[in-house]
Length: 361
Image (cartoon, rainbow, N blue to C red; front, side, top):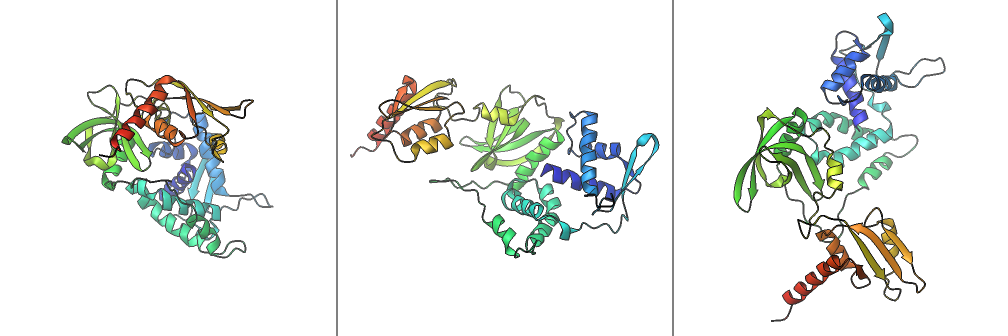
């Protein structure tokens, strides 16, 4: 999707230019608009832009000429510099009839599933493209009936199984302000609603984490040293502060999440990894459970082995989290926790509490 938007940005830039632009000019525009990472080396970035321009020229026909669906022109200048332009500027139109169906489908699914969490500006820019994509999907393509491609878009849904919590409504303007703080590298101020009432914060924004059904702001207080998370739907109002955000340049949000920083720990002071060992006796094994564990292991290093008596043994490195305890409860009728003692005790303590709470009075 980012590649598609970057190529649209190239066409828009050339459309608005009244003079031909060099590949270097186009690259600088893309860097300024954050379509190309500033940390990417100049040679690598130029190769990326050149590939985009070659794509926009289109496929080469039998005579060696590109079909050039966008009316892109290129001329060679001094020192082998290439100059790019779109002509005529005022009459340029995108040929939506030639949009590949897979691209229209991608745009259609983007609008359906991602629009609620996209910045408002991005939604506005994409609105026309999404409308044209819907129109393209409604047309026949290569002998297929008009509804065939639309059927796929309508047949893919995100859903949370079980007794799913309903997503809390959040203010789209607040989410837009968070995105603007990230894009502009500015500090963020906001009012946050908690059990103690409204509190005002001034933070350096590290990112937005989507842990369905909730959205979280990941940030560091201006006077703090550690990262904190804030529920987006509890942010009452948000604004950009005048100062620049100070964010660790080596920070990676996905790595931070995968390290377990947003897990719900049974003991906040204990984030160690433990070797979990379970036994599934053959007499109590549920049909399909082993297949589920093979398909969706509880950790990347999970192992499943079978002994001579037909019992199965699971080994995995895990942390003491609420999520793990819930999962162990779901298999407690068919599995025995062999180790470690602390995780077995976590489950037993909860079971005793449940029994005491549900005891007849």
